[in-house]
Structures are given as structure tokens and as C-alpha cells.
Amino acid sequence: MLFSIPDDHACLPGHFPGRPLVPGVVVLEQVLCAVQAQSGVAANRLRLPQVKFMAPLLPGQTARVELEGQAPRWKFRVLRDAELLVRGELVLESDDVPA
Image 1: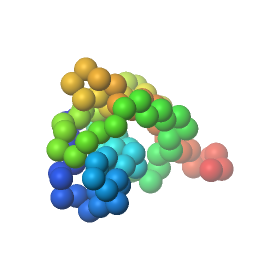
Image 2: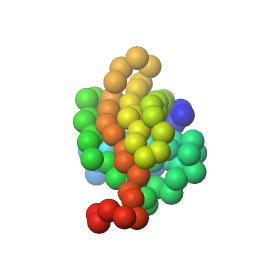
Image 3: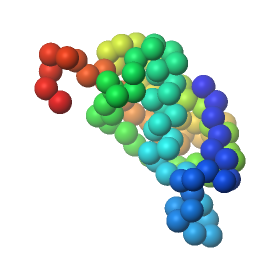
Image 4: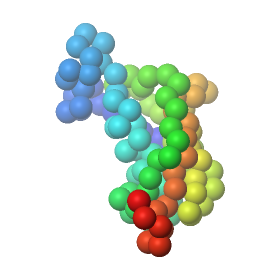
């Protein structure tokens, strides 16, 4: 899934003045959207036990989410061209397991 965060997105003012960066939480939201689009799993049923940010995403840059696996566990990567920006793991919360 490709995505881009526009220069005028509400998350950018103050993050950081003079050199805006897309906040990690906004990038992770795109990962959740990709899983939801692929599997139909609601984002509020997913947790992120492992996430590593490798490089920043700037406003207007195009990135892509790559998913590997299927419910209940996925590995993900977010890339800008060939550069790895974020990698991690998503897990579907079980109704039987306390959070």
C-alpha cells in the first residue's frame, strides 16, 4: 500500500518547526490501515509488540507498507523507495487473552 502525508496535514505544525517530520504514530496508522484493508481486521484489535524506526519520513514523500503473514500475526516494513523507514510486528488481540 502506497501513502503520502501532505505538507498541510494537521500533525505537522510543531513536529518540528523549520524541518517537519511525519510523526511515527501517523506512519503506524498507515500500517494499521494496510492490515485492515488486507484482512478486514479492525485496527482497535491490533497491537504492536515490536516497532523500530530506522529513518524519518518527510511530508510529501511517498512510502509503501509491505506486509508478511496473516492473522493473528504480521511482520511489516515501511519503505521509501528501497530505504527501510520502519519495521515491526502486529498481533491480533485474542478475546481469550488479557491485554
